[in-house]
Amino acid sequence: MTKNIYLNIHYFIVFFDRFFYYCSQSGAKVSPKMSKKKTMYSLEFPIRCSPTILYGFLSTPVGLQEWFAEKVDQRDHKFFFTWNGATDEAEVLEHLDDEFIRMRWNHAAKDEFFEFSIDQSSVTNETILRITDFAEKNDLKDQQRLWSTQVTELKHRIGS
Image (cartoon, rainbow, N blue to C red):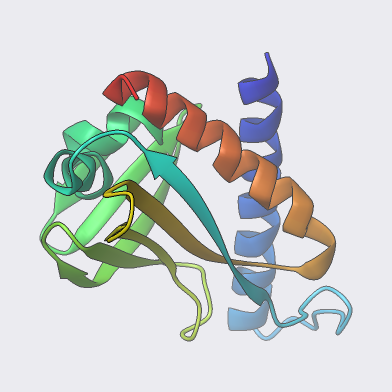
């Protein structure tokens, strides 16, 4: 139930991001209040698995479909994520096997991205997933909760 609430919040945010993007592309006036620059934030989650296994869940359609979206397809350097019949596209900007993958939604500003990076603590040897994303300040808490819910699902799928 909680996951569905956060997914609905995600769909709502994506819808309005797309709406304002298309309005700005068509020359329509967008209220300055609604087109604020987003804030970058990072979250860290300990994950009990190897970086190689975790990277597969973060960078492949099969892995992402396990925890991130209902359906995921990939063509060249683009991923197509489907939730409740709506598809969103993200381009892979950079990646380094077993270390990170950075993507940008097709409706996002050029300086915005979301990134999954993997670190391993030299002290505890624990694998750490760091998620970097952008959100408007008033949506920050909801976005953080959404990622927490998604990562809980990821941990469940990995068996962590």
